[in-house]
Every structure is written in C-alpha cells, then in structure tokens.
Image (cartoon, rainbow over all chains, first blue to last red; front, side, top):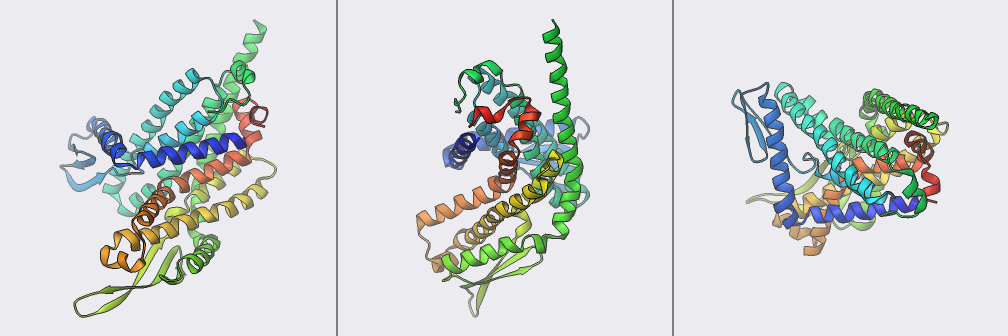
Length: 169
Length: 208
C-alpha cells in the first residue's frame, strides 16, 4: 500500500505539473475544455433550443446568464487522479488501458452532468450555484473517481497480480 | 460448473456492496456538509493556527497578523497600496471553506465504511487534513500578493521570478488537487481492509 501511495503521489504531481505547462494548456486542456462545453451544450439543446456555445462558454439566448468552464471544472484534474491511481496499482497493462478509457468516460460523463446542472442552478439561484460549484460537485466528482477505481481494482485479473506481487507502475 | 456459479454469485454481491457503500456515502454527504458549514469557525481553527504559525516564521516581513472571522481568514499585511493622494495598508481575505470541503467528504466516506475504528479514523483524518487546508489558504494569500495584485504590490513582497512560479504552482495544487484528493487518499490509506473486502481482492498481500 505504501508503494502504491508513493507512486500515485509522484505520478499525480508530475502529470499535474505537465498539465500546467503552456504547451499542454494550448494543445490539450483548452481543446478538451471546449469539447466539454460543446458536449454539454449538445445535450442541453435536446431539451433547450436556446443554448449556444463559444469556446468554453455556454450561454442561452433566453437569459443573460452564462457559464465559463475553467480549470477544475473541465474534469482534467479528476481524470489525472484516476489515471495516476490506475497506473500506480499493480495490474496488467491491458486491464490498465481498458480501465483508463472506461474511467475517463465515467468521469467525463459525470462532469458533463455537473456542467449542465450548474448552468441551470446558476440561472435559478446564484447562492445555490456557488455552493454546488465550489463544494458539492467537487466532492461528488472525487467520489466518482474513488468508486470507479474501487470497481476497477475489483476487476483486476487475479493470476497476473499473484505472479507479480510488486509490479506497481 | 459449480465453481463458475459460485464466481457468478460473488461478483454481483461485490458489485452491490460497492453500490451500497456509494449510496451510504451519498446519503451521509449532505449531513457532513451541513455540519462542516455550520461548525466551520471551530473546525477550521487549527488550520488557521497553522497558517498563523507558518506566516509568522516564513513571511513575517509581509504578514502582520492573520485574523479569523467565521470561515474567512484575513491577512493583515505590511504591504501598501499607493494611490494618487493616499496610501493604504493591504489586507487579503481568503475563504477557508474553498480548501476544506474535503473534510465532509472524508467524514462521509469514513462513516459509510462502517469500520469499528471509525472514531480513530475521523480524528486522524481531521488532524491530517489541517495542513492541507493551511496549504491552500497560505498559497491563496501568496498568489494574491505576489501575482494577482499587480507589480506595484508584488515588488514589495521581494519574491523573485522562480518564487512567483512556485507560488502559482502551489496555489494550483492547493486549490485544484489537494482539497479533493487528500481526503480520498487518506481514506484509502486508512481503509485498506475495507477496500479489499469491497474489491473482493487482497490489497495487503499485493503491497506489503
């Protein structure tokens, strides 16, 4: 467990530092954030035709309220946490890769739900929006990451792990 | 045949136990959030004591005192804002709740695990999360005076280029990663047996 925690923390700090560099921001984070905004808006348009997007901003022609998806709300950090946890845990590479793909989908699906819910909460009540945005959804996303990781650990094939007990990362 | 039937039985049971745990955590979260919000002045007092101590020893030249008002930390600085006709002393307010929402998450996870030693886990987790909260609060203050406030104020702090970079990184880490990740990591570290049971696997033999 100690080895898992050390590898996890190192991977997380390194990947987070890389995420903050200008090239990573320009080529990965910004396009990703715009894609999150577009995906959220596409889903919202199913029941709300007034929704429009411009880059990372989601707005509505029916109201002056708009949300801008910023760092911390694009699901990138939650994804980094999940990927670091899966890489740090001893598991066969195919299982890791499958877990990372499915995990990213699970985290981003909840993140899109967060964005959509925050948009409508913000239109309804600014205080509730602040609470949900700053505290509640942050905890829920991390709970999502934790649950996905536990399920993934449960599905790690038993035999390769027994054969290489210390094969973390 | 009997063996595969047994495996098939075990898997849904483990899945449902993960689902039950997630459901218990979701039910406990609102209560934990309410307790955290209303008891914040008391719960966050140790973290602010830590902030005061760190500010006193590491940033005594720019921080006069750190005052607490509810969940708000106010840094009274030695820095000055110079206007055309007047000069004022700079104070920086930091919302401590922004860096402590991991406390209710940790409480909900710990209570949902229903382990015998939950009280010890709560006390240890609470103590371990205080430096994380202090990190966020202090990094927020430093980011404000060294970066956000502009060159006129930043020049008074005496921070060089690499120090401002380090402050920016510490702030990003302290706001985007640590408040959410620290409680989850602490919880995992304290509940290896519970996770093993949830995962239906032995974590301990794997990572001695």
